[in-house]
Image 1 (cartoon, rainbow, N blue to C red):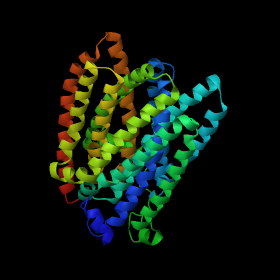
Image 2: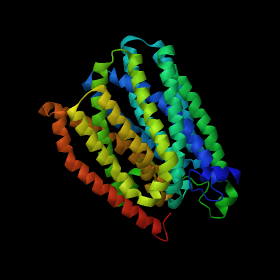
Image 3: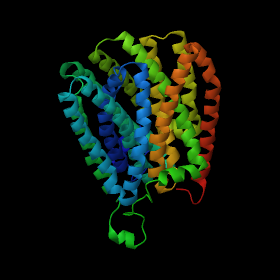
Image 4: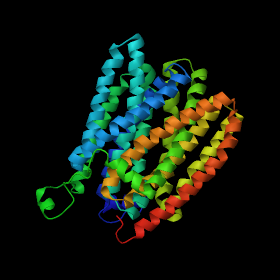
Length: 432
C-alpha cells in the first residue's frame, strides 16, 4: 500500500498494478542503459565510416539485415513461448557484444574498419528488435487504458537507464576507449533479462500445461510462421497506418542523422570527442524526457488522446529542419536533436506503443517487429536516398525545409487518424 501511495504521486496506478509497473520500468531501465552505452559507439563508427557516401551504404546494409532477421524472428516466435523467446533475444544480444569486443580489440586496419561497419549494421538492426520485443511484451500484458496511464512511467525507467548509460559513456569513453564499453552493455542487458523473468512470473506468462489444457493461450507460441508478420501487416489498414507514421518519422530522422554526421565530423576531429558529444546529447535528452515522463506523460496521454500526442513529432521535425536551414552548426544541431528526441521519447513513443494494445497477440510480436525493424530501416534507406537527391539537386537546407512542409501536413493527418482508429478499436467489445 505504501509503495502504491508513493507511486500515485506521479502516476495513476490502480490496485494490483504496482508490482508489474515497477518490474517493467526496471527491465526497461537496464535495457536502455545498455542501449545508450552502445548508441554513441555505433554513431562514432558511423561518423568515421569513410564519408557520407559510405554512411549512406550502411543504411542500405541495415535494411538488408532486417530482411534476414525478420523471418528468423518469425520462426522463433512461431516455435517458442513468450517466456522463452523474449529473454532469449536479450541473451543473444549481450553475447554478441562480447564477440564484437574481441573483434574490435584484436583486428586492425581494413579488417577492423570492416568489423566496425558490420557492427553499425548489426547494432542498428538488433537495437530496434530488442526494444520492439520489449514493448510488444508489455502491449501483451497491459490493456489500452492502462497503457495510456502507465507506459509513460515505464518509459521513465528506460529514460533513467539511458541517463546512466550516457553518463557511463561520457565518463569512460576517453579514459578506457569506446570498445571496452561493449562489456558494460552486455552486463546491463543480462540484468534486464533477470527483471523480465520476474515480470513474467508476476503475470504468470506461459504458466504450463494445465492452463493450456484448460484452453488458455498461455504457453502457446504467439506466432504461426516465419513470414506471418509480413502477412498480417499487409492485411491490416491499421497496421499500414502505423507503418506510414513510422516511415515518415524515420525518413526525417535519417536526413537529420546524416546532417549530424557531416556537422560533427567537421567540428570534432577525435573519436573520443565525437563519442562524448553524442553521449552528452543523449544525456540531456534523457534528463528532459525523464522530467516530462515523471510529471506529464501519464496525465497528458489520457487527457489529449494518442492522435494529438503523435502529431507533435511532425511539427517539431519541421521546425528543426528550418532551424538547421538557418544555422547548420553543432550547437543548433544539438538543440534540434535534443528537443526532437525528448518529444519523441516522452510523448510520441508511449503513444505509438499504446497503438498496439488493441491488436491480436500475434500482431503484437510478429507484425510489430516487422514494422519496428524492416519498415523503420526502409525509412532509413529512403532518407539516405533523399539526402543524396538533395545533394545532387544542390538544394539548400532551408529549401529542403520548405519542401518538407507538405510532408509534415500528411504526417499530422496520419497521426490524428491513428488516434481515432485506436480509440474505436479499444471500445469494441472484441478489442484487446
